[in-house]
Length: 152
Image (cartoon, rainbow, N blue to C red; front, side):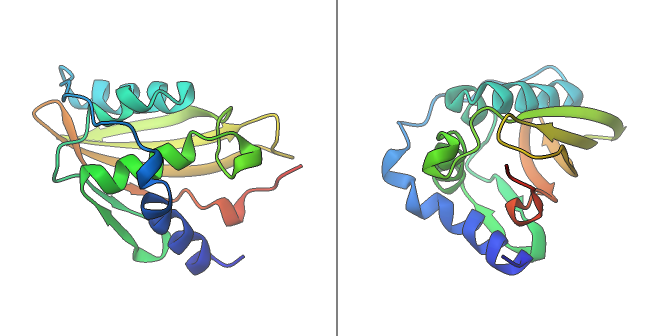
């Protein structure tokens, strides 16, 4: 699978799983930019959909590999509803994102990370930039691309 197909797959995941997504939770702000980023990573590792979605305002934008954009809380909610499914159902439940380096510039937190999971043949590395404002995440730019992962 090439990067364009993988990015399109992640972008359309929001549509494919939209009916599986529960009602969006209320927003929950964090005290600073780093806490927004670390709450995201912790909630992602727990596949806690409510915690993930509590930090995204309606204006949320994800920029995926190949320049694909996913915008809005409902679309992102659908992406994470799909992401948090078991691996056999096409999701990534059980993945553990481990921050390796972190650099904060203003309200943007840049993180290089690795993913470990029982269903991966080797750790997968990438990076994100989290643009925050007022204790919420407004934009995430990510290199996450399942096409680059080596599965068992």
